[in-house]
Length: 246
Length: 246
DNA sequence: GTGGTCCAATGGTCCAACCAATTTCCGCAC
DNA sequence: GTGCGGAAATTGGTTGGACCATTGGACCAC
Image 1: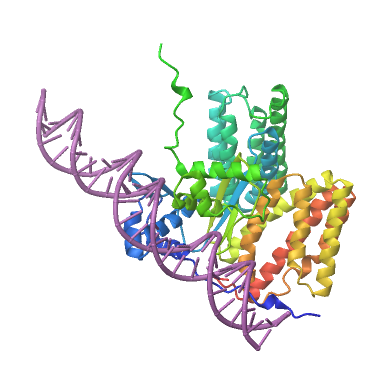
Image 2: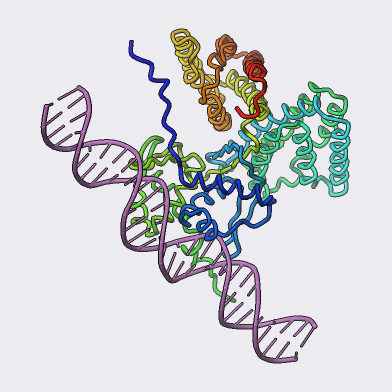
């Protein structure tokens, strides 16, 4: 039997641009920078941090890739989201996203998350939370009726409220990321104007379960809602003769 | 009537490093590069693509941030995941990640996804798939017994097999991203060596449900597994007097 | 074999420019 | 004073060249 080498972890070596990012985190914390505000120039950062401008750019490129920062040539680099020292990044790259199958795959993920979020929301919602969700629901139903089903924006706000009340920001982040991809497909007009009509009534049933603290019921209604969306999608795809490229 | 100018300038003057990435996608496809293989050196890329090496580096930095490649100084740049032309990127950043609460949040997501994946896996597994999962299970159980519970690697392989058989690559991608973060905490030795012991028996029960095409059973067993992990976590956190920083 | 030395390859960093988009500002016409 | 137009400054984007640090293989002495 040979020795167990597992107790020899890789030695920790320092990375230059990591240090730059750490320093930058300290700066935005000290300066109390809010999203939208401008960061120091690359040249200033390079000078103050005693590193080359190239290194600064490598670090900022990574932040840009994470969506934390936006660079505008000729203008400056702007903070896009709050940053803090202890932050976890999980970059997801989805292969092959322009066909019907990928769309169904994102829906499978959403089904799992939406049900869990609704369930947790029903468990954890305070009276104020319930009132907030009801407000979003009313706005959505109003928009649905007056604009004949075109209530995507208000619909989304309603769901976001549920994710928030679930107490786990990951729900909103993950589903929001997929929602963004979702829109890229359907914003191209392709004859599915009344997409989502069938799911309308389930928004209220979900709300009622949440208001009644009915965790299992909320989960069940959320599953029904996603099921109608899946059906709509399948029907639309069938009508379009299943185009490979939407 | 004016001429149709659409046929000319899509020139290079826009988004240089994006063009570099696009060219790299083409190269990887043409050379049929598999994950683990080496990409051309930065100098060669810069020369062939007629751009500066710095521009190549900016592009590669972005790919590195997305987890698509890994750079090793003195050695080269290696492909870490399959790349294709139509890839969608969704960066997730979780604020305040080094504490107990964030850990529980990732577990809530994993609970939802793990249950769904197990359920889908039971529905869709072919006999070959079942055999493959059983093989991973055997390896894991063997490692567990001979190494007294230190079977994290084999455990992970078992779960990955389930995600794969689910037919939806998103499961593996999302959970793998969280798994990576997970490890960052536990690689620092902190006295929870037998973490995960309690979840051991549920791996076999999950497998049995999958083999029996018992979708609901697989979901239930997966939920039990995650529940034991959550319990372990809570117990460990309580024993350590809830340290803010793990 | 084992360990050591050397050396070429490769990613990491630095510098000093210049280019391109944007913003700022100043002077001129009204 | 107001509005506008264009120079000038600012700022991110790109370039080419240089050097450093690490890696990994070749070669050698023992």
